[in-house]
View: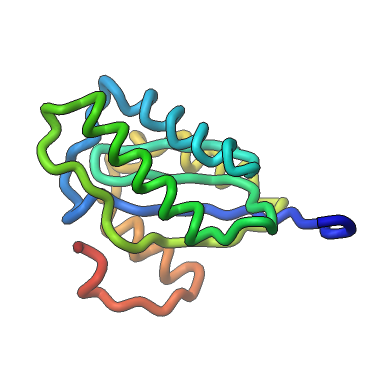
Length: 150
């Protein structure tokens, strides 16, 4: 699109179905790289992807040619297939249906990058559900608690 300019940083968070601890430390870096590749293949610029046993954080620059929901649907479906193919011992791997999407100022990029990079240390103090609720509240996102653990 000629004369269309954008720089929209998005921080996406979603969990495994029922927040089950299915992502193993031994292959999480491969999953992160695979997810980053899907996003890049859709013309988006990845800042960082980092997963924990029950959820994933994606921080990227959203280009205007594709809706974030369509991109995340693609990320979820393709990465689920990847997990099932490459780690068949993982029983019934699925992502939750929705996701949290938080817009970030260019001035916050380093802070958000470091937050996502240091997830292991962070989750020694706060579990993923509390983290997600805190993010929803900080960004003033309306939510229904009953959908947070699907």
